[in-house]
Image 1 (cartoon, one colour):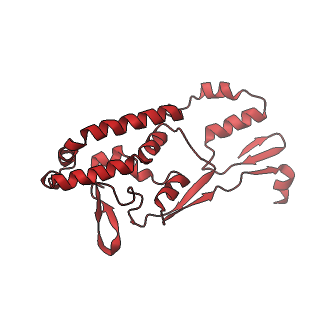
Image 2: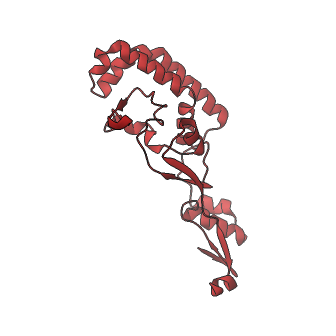
Image 3: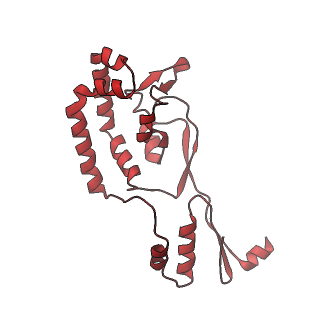
Length: 204
């Protein structure tokens, strides 16, 4: 809540952090938000524009495609799973399927989320995982393993190296939900920002 003169501004905690609230209040009172930002510098990571994201995505996919024939060995060593090497042909086939699925948007999404190219704070996502496997490249992820009742689980879920991915960040947008036709999550609008005058506050 911010009080400026005769008006009280109340904000939902999720879309408004404290620095943004202070900057908004300063703008309403004629104080330069730029000066405040310099006093309290943002700790956000650097951003990238769409062109940079596009070329970085293409570069990563190209490098991986050239090295894909050694990936079963690399994955076997990293995740301590000998079956990736023993079943080399099957692993290579799955990796090519995995790479094809990654090239249809997920790598670009990962870079965008990493460098905060696109952020939509006007909506919130609610729901829970149903273990349908859809978000794992529509059940094409190399590490996905089937379990009972037609459900799936990540075969390297407890691996330390999994933390370098953003799999756990799913979903970060409505685009994610639509791409994989996810049945467990729903996009909802944030509660509207309420602006009350002192008189309205006294009445309520």
